[in-house]
Image (tube, rainbow, N blue to C red; front, side):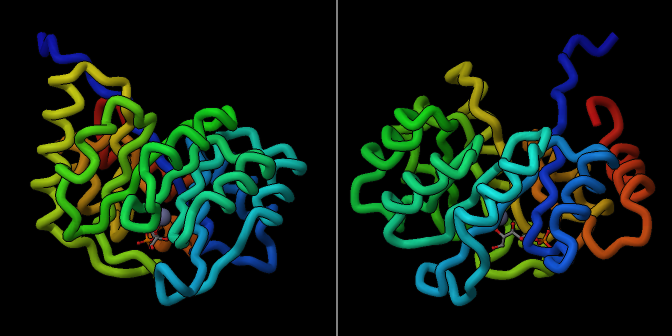
Length: 228
Ligand code: DX5
Ligand code: ZN
C-alpha cells in the first residue's frame, strides 16, 4: 500500500478569463462545478502591462456571499495601500510580488494583521532564494508559470524545477504553506505539475469559456487522479 498520504488538490479558477458581463453567475457556476477557491487577478497597468479590476469587485463578490476563499493575486506596485483595501473588501488570501514591495516582511505582516492569509508570488525568472527567509510566514507560495499580465498564455515548463525545489523546502521545514502554480495550466499538463509538488492550481482559460463547467472539472479531477 502506498503509505505516502495523497495530497489534496485545490482548483482556483481565475476570473480574469470569465465573462465580465455575467461575473456573479460565472462565479456561482464554477463553484457549483467544484471550484475550491476563486482566483482574483488584480492588475494596475504599472507592475504588469494590463489593467483588470480592484477592491470594489472583490467587495461585490463578498457581499454576494461567495462560498469559497477569495485568492487575491496582486500584480500591482506599490502594494501596501491595496493590501489594506482588499482586507476590507473581504479577501481570504492576499499574495503579492516581492519585487513590488520595498519592505516584504512589513507587507506580509500587514496582510496577517488584517486577518488574511499571506502569500508571495514568484515570476518565472525569480529564484526561490528571494523568499526563503520569510517562507515560514507564508500561507501561500504562488509560482508563476507564465509572465504575469494576461490569461491564455502557454505554460513555461522550466518552472517545474522551481516547483520541485519549493515542495522539498516546504516539506523539509514541515510548513503548512500552500504551493500554488499559476498560468497555462490545462487538463493535459496538470498531472505533471501536481507530480512536481503543487497542491493548488490556478486555471483561467482552461475553465472559463468551456461549454460545460461540470464536465471541465470532471476532466481536471480525472487528470489529477488520487487526491484530485
Ligand atoms: C496572469 C494571471 C493568471 C492567469 C491564468 O498574470 O496571474 O492567473 O489569469 O490564466 P490562464 O489559466 O489562462 O493562464
Ligand atoms: Zn494570477
